[in-house]
Image (cartoon, rainbow, N blue to C red; front, side, top):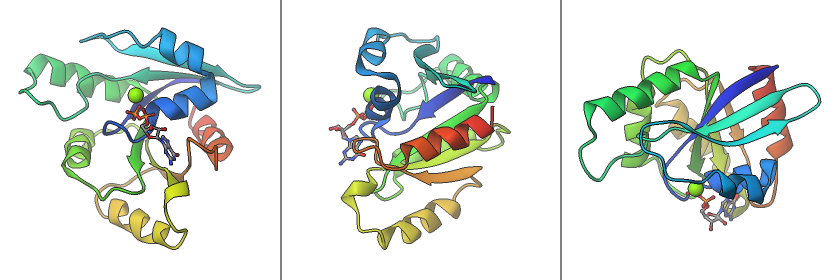
Length: 166
Ligand code: GDP
Ligand code: MG
């Protein structure tokens, strides 16, 4: 099994931390060259039964300046072509405008979207249910997986669940 996974989410939610944990710091940094219109491979994870190619999709973040139609089209097409979209959010932050922008962009897309709620080490376990409910109202996610990319909580479970969709 092999497939492409696009990791999207607002800045500082923990995308790089996740990649560094599962793939290794060196690879993530090595491929971290600025690119504008092409997708960049951030790392490849090979396990016993699967190969996951994680890519960054430029143009997904809410732009400071108006995005050209071309960039927007490229980004949307990419999200259609990948096997899984990993939408990462910060458990400490409420659903904000940056998330709305991304969720609007996902509307009508048939690609399965994982909601990955990161930084659960920063919240009380009781808070998780409310957080999940607020996102469920807004989008029909294929899976919702809480993790701590920094401490590693539930990361193995996330990888196993991703692998099921490849
Ligand atoms: P990115 O912009 O989405 O790539 O976010 P980064 O991976 O650069 O992380 C932004 C900040 O959040 C860094 O200071 C990380 O150490 C921190 N961070 C990432 N994941 C976690 C987590 O699970 N728990 C906590 N407490 N901090 C995290
Ligand atoms: Mg990053």
